[in-house]
Image 1 (tube, rainbow, N blue to C red):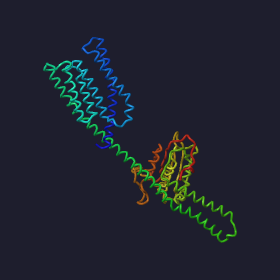
Image 2: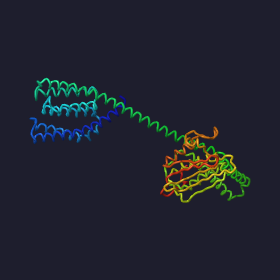
Image 3: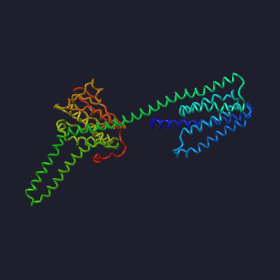
Image 4: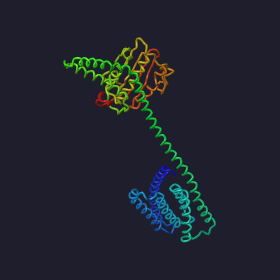
Length: 444
């Protein structure tokens, strides 16, 4: 038996022992109550006080065991099987006494032995459970000659023989069932463990896909970024050459100009490092209009954006959304890139970024007047690796990842499209009630 199997068995054994303890409280109380009724309403059997005494003894045993339970849990040396043997042994002795005092071979309590065989099959290994059945037969066989004597009626002897055979047979049947249940429980736990590993692996792969899509976006911006950085660097180089030719002529204004160009480069780098950061962060209240403007500030490096007519329809009543700013930043960049690709080569290309408020939701829309999406492809738009772009230009992951990011924030990403006219992607996210956070505070 493996370590995991032993842990599963021990856990099941503890649960069954707790349940048997609760059942024993009810059984002991029932014995005491029936013993009192038997004594008051007219005895059917000779032993009145003894029956009540057995019930009280069971209650006392339960009480002692319950009081000792906290100390026992702090010790590691007591096997659970030994505890099960102690319970079953006390139960069989008490049940045998009650059986002998209520008719012996004709006692109505004889069927209750089968219940204890079920307990033994569940709590103990198979061989030990058979030993419990033999112990029950031996206890009754030893008690009958001392209390009622061996039955002389052939029918009673047949009843006892059938009872003695039924006990080990019950152990065999129940043991087969419990072993199968244990096997199924073990398989269930193993399957759950495998599913957890698969879930962790899928989460890691999803994070890698998100990061990959960010790097793809950065690659698309590379040319514009190079141009954005080269201009201030060229100006800085010219100033430094001028200062080197005339070191005796200080130029205070040149220092300010250099610092201004450095700040411009730092802002560009900050946008890129913000995009490349793998940690998306936690949800916070973010001004929806400020987020759209920040996205456009990042995309100003893309030469394609300079070739389209940009229309901003930002409703000031939109307010703040409860989102992960970095994740939504990536979503909007993906949508804008898709729109720019759809309008490539179109002379009257128009990109519309729109925000509005709908009750408890903030809506951000990206609309283009490009080629549109055919209705036959609508059900495949958000599938991973599906793309209509030429080979080598699109990964087919942008929309799939974007939808997952939006849904992870309690929102939804949808679209509507007319072929040859326009396509609109709508990001619906929960509105926030708190003070919006500054986008400049996002870690880089």
